Image 1 (cartoon, rainbow, N blue to C red):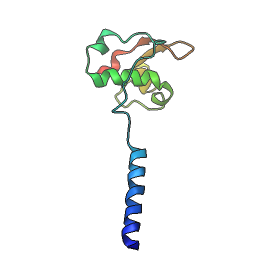
Image 2 (image 1 turned 60 degrees about the vertical axis):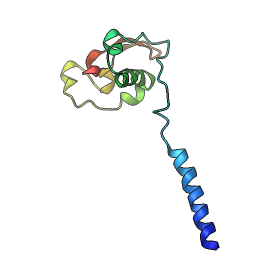
Image 3 (image 1 turned 45 degrees about the vertical axis):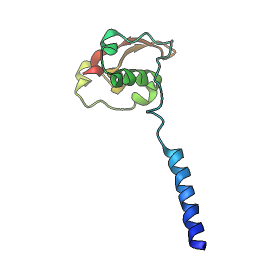
Length: 104
């Protein structure tokens, strides 16, 4: 009986941990904040994943800016992965101009 109780307890604990660790990114509906310039046609004519990536780059610019870019765009003046999606921002981190490099 003690063994069954222990297994039951472990199963419940594992279920709670798994539920807490599950990713909600797939369930999230990505929407562009109104402070940003609307997505341009070259993004809107791309796949849904590309559109989501541009929106995520504008939502979390400080995170994307920490990711180095390995595609060779440093020659184009890019300093981080953020530069592949965003060309310019205002003082309040609102996107003023989008970069088309992120769709390729």
